[in-house]
Image (cartoon, rainbow, N blue to C red; front, top):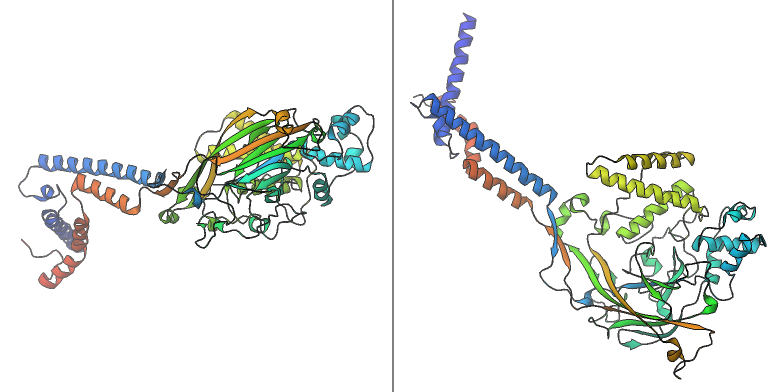
Length: 549
């Protein structure tokens, strides 16, 4: 008796479900459901409508999935701005000039020291050996017979005297003419000495070191010290509203050669050291923002001796709207300044991040930091050039590895062999295998400069002996450099939201409406039939299913 009663109740419940579902189908705004419950229809019609409805549901699901993937992968777009940007709103590029003579007049001659060591004419006294090692970090690796000698092992570690001696040995940059933005003046005080891979270089329009670096960075001599201590500009907000016309970093009013930086740099044969650098002597010039430390191994243009070079500059600026902040950095593929705090630099840029990453990894692998990178008080200066080259190989390998992993591609056999090779490098240094991922995405608000150059020969003799110029150099060389913005104003690019949550919702709702007629009202109907209508049926009829037929 109990089993029969239970079976009867279950059958009654199933029947009530069918009645309630039939009632919903006859009332809902979703297309096609009313045919499922219409009385008197054949089984063929019901199956046919079921297949139609299922096909529409599958097609709708696939379309919604594609829209979702597009929303996740292309939510951010970088497009040209709708209006032009004035050159007055951005700084003139910082100009870094590296003299290929490297060392000043009356300093130890690297070419002569190198020749004597290679021919075993002398092993050098302690002072000469130390200076030669200093020079070798900038010029080239010492000869093999020197590295195997006892002199090469005298100085395993360099002290801070390295920078004092390099400052004493640095070449002077003799300018015979200088003008900036229509105002002619003596420009030498606007060029500050900085430390780069090329040795001591000179930079115009860079921020002072107190605004470039954090307090934990150790400074030497007067490097990175500029006459103007305070900046009126930052990389995200631009120039402050109260910034004056002569604000720093310097800016110009419009483009064209008349609003330019013009230099004529003088050099003497006595300053040229052919053993240190290549035979093509001259100057390396690099344009960068005022908050970036230049890396002349990456990109520069050449200013030869006895040549005139004209560089027309096109600013490349990208700004980001507030709407992209809600996305993660890897979704929008950039960092805002407050999202990524660097250890050594106050401003985040991709270039600063890469330099810091390399400094940290060199410190880990070699227990020292290259002389041209920022370092803390306790960090020592690297003398092992082989170890520094290993760092470059490992970091390049790790970069390729992370790019391959990120693209879900299968690594090639060559890459796997290179990974094994770098792993052995780490083990040879008794270091645990740590794969570096610098994660140096671009800055969300970014400024860079594209350069087009042209050059022509200078008739040095006519220029010097025209009666207007006199010098005390023997066999002088002159190089002329002119830098200006190509056009004014310019079109920047904007990083903004392409598909927002509202756009996705609109596409999602459009597809549901197209395939089934489903809408927000349809959703409310479902909620109503599952909650309020059941409660009201119990109150009105004493049964959740409602009034019986």
